[in-house]
Amino acid sequence: GSARGIGRAICEQLASDGVDNIVVCDLKAEWCGETVAAIQALGKNAVAVEINVGDAASIEKGVDEVIAKFGQIDICVNNAGITKDGLLMRMSEEDWDAVLDINLKGAFLMTKAVAKHMMKARSGAIVNIASIIGLMGNAGQCNYAASKGGLIALTKSSARELAGRNIRINAIAPGFIQSKMTDVLTDEVKAKMMENIPMKRLGQPSDIAKAVSFLAGDNATYITGQVLSVNGGMLMP
Image (tube, rainbow, N blue to C red):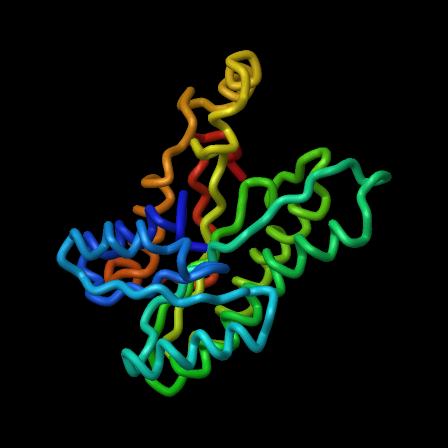
């Protein structure tokens, strides 16, 4: 999920912080052009790889392509996600399944695919992008909350399984981050949101990207199975 928004910011941050080879993955390879160009402008190597995280065969094909080109995978960020909001009593089974398939099953399949190679190397870092909604819930988002809460549980369980192979797995739970979705909100709605954020501002994609870079890097080598909340103080568990 790195063609735009938070995913693009993560790619650029990792490149700025010393990652030499970045694989930009999204549903369509052509969507990734701007992110690839931005990374190359930083003097780093970037390639686009088409992956549909809802399809196990697509994931295996994409991972095989990365291994064939670079020989290893050191960092994996599971950022792909969708929403299909609706009240519980009106939510269709199709909308439930679609969100769980991408947000949770997709991360499971991707983790399984890259962990196979990380285990051989006895090294690796995986960062899952969860959500504040997975910690606190939200009316109208039962499917999204379940997917992100499940992602947090997946993070902890897989971290326990793979720690012995020196593979660290952590999650980040963003709060409200400025995006195309929040840009269309009215000033009244934004003001209401700010009432619940002690820092009185929306987060920026760069706030999440910096947290990812920390958890994936050498300053977090003794951190695994953790959930880092980046929400301006909106939720303090």
